[in-house]
Image (tube, rainbow, N blue to C red; front, side, top):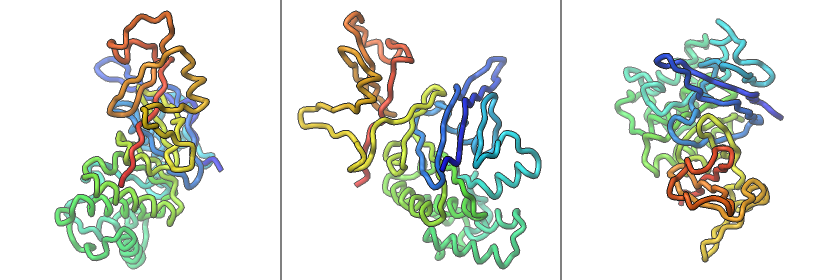
Length: 304
């Protein structure tokens, strides 16, 4: 069942008298209970899309709907209630997740206090959530007394306090080391199953993105779906010993050309079609090919 739908979403900002277009006609949907990762470089528009779905911003054009409700039309108390109860947020910056002067328990209880939950009920649920993220033994520690991984687990508990249906995670492991990031993502995936969450994750890290059901790429405000799987039996690609890589049918159709130039970038691999009439301009990099001819396939790495 389709749950989140973005139709021809455009987001533009004014800066120093100039218009900056962050999103260019995005069409995007998610089903209930799905985890989707959007991967792309800084400035690609990932956070802009998440803010629109979370009701923190409004689109310049197009529509963002959740379960048939147009989020952009929400105003006043309805918008505040949507942000407080329907959506949970996890940010990379710890100061956006947790209040430094409060304990882990106090931070998790705070959203419930704002929602009008009784003191007893919010304390019981806060402890249940801390136990769910394996922090019950650190409930009375302040933020500064928690490690980076513990802080992010506490942030997840805060995001789940009011039983949201949607969890939006913006670079949730960006400040963590690889081992801790893997632990946080494994926990997030377990909690998604436990609480039937619909999770949208934005990141620049493929090791984080591979925990999702689907991986989408976002670059220069344009969204494209990955054509490769990322599981053992879901149609993922396998690199042979001689370095050859069989492309899926959709990729071969999109890249129909006598030759294909391959460029390895931090955010993925760029496959650029080259015709026999093209000059040898591979050294010019990405700008040598029109954007309409580019297709992105993210690198797939596994966490051991």
